[in-house]
Length: 462
Ligand SMILES: Cc1cc2nc3c(=O)[nH]c(=O)nc-3n(C[C@H](O)[C@H](O)[C@H](O)COP(=O)(O)OP(=O)(O)OC[C@H]3O[C@@H](n4cnc5c(N)ncnc54)[C@H](O)[C@@H]3O)c2cc1C
Image (tube, rainbow, N blue to C red):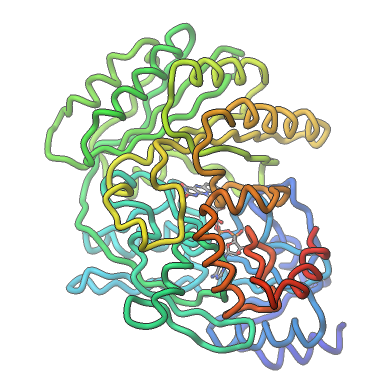
């Protein structure tokens, strides 16, 4: 392998890390410490030519490929034992055209890279809520965050992309060029090529009223209902998320994260949330959007994670009580249940414009087991699975691909798109990646003729 790596190093403008290199241990790390893999090499590409060379090298040497953007995917798809990681962390430039109101980000940019660049012009595109998450990985799965109600899913704001296919071909996707590919990458994941540049529509935004409202103790069930009721009636000026958990004192706790972008100084929706029972801390204020993007911000590579959830059509009292029972059942911080609203702009977009199949759902309810001690792995994973099973009766569109672990069956991935879109994605996969070279993702197996190669590749998947 050492001799072959010299060949790869010569082919790339970027650099290649091998296990003996000082930076390798850090570079192989995922956000999720539950994933501990040792690639044969990490190709840190700097442009599309590097990506094409790395793809060719891996296939010539029969190395399994993992593509790494921000390294956040809980399934750890960005890491692979004994294979080649195509790492885009050196491709993080973001160009903003304030006149045209578009931003073009390289394939490895993070949300803080993109937000900092666009906010310098008082502009924004809706993204994720944690700055270190990869822009590309999040977009490819849909994208839910602080501006979802206002401007839709992140992928709804993706207007064009440049990808390198496993065959090394540079392809473009837009309304005018390969529109079916643009449809597919709006939710269909990293199945069709390595994205090197993505162009987003931007919207004017200066300050927001946002931050965190914390509720504790006996008031939590009422506050959870208030969150649901406020969200149901809110205008598109308010995006809202909630996190339910047990705090260090083993009492129920709820965090609500509103992000209001309208013109009222004290909007009715926020007044209603503030008057809900159990409020113990009010951190909501007028602040810059960049500050809003820092209200969560967990440390990278600190915790072990196992996530599983469902899109639901409603949040009836019975489901809320089930969620409260389930956090009490864990009885151990800091695992949480995240509830993300899909109200507003996602519903106003032409549903045929994107592969995502969940925009009709009311909420994304995700069980997020988060822990540090490896001795708790079995307990935490069991809690997440059992809690997700308890939510399943209300499930409407499968689970959120961006939060899926690697153990999800194909049926759950199909359900996330619906059977028709899933079949169309398989046809697209066959066109761009017939051998399923890019299979370390929420995988869309190639249709018919690619099935044998797909089965072979899937059989190797950890
Ligand atoms: C702390 C945290 C916060 C999060 N917050 C949100 C949130 O607010 N909203 C939300 O919707 N999701 C959120 N997510 C989920 C996140 O969107 C997905 O996990 C996403 O896959 C992460 O992308 P990444 O590039 O960081 O991850 P990686 O692990 O680097 O990549 C994940 C996969 O995406 C694909 N991929 C990445 N880059 C490329 C590329 N350039 N070309 C082709 N394929 C690529 C590959 O298949 C890769 O395996 C969060 C995750 C974490 C851990």
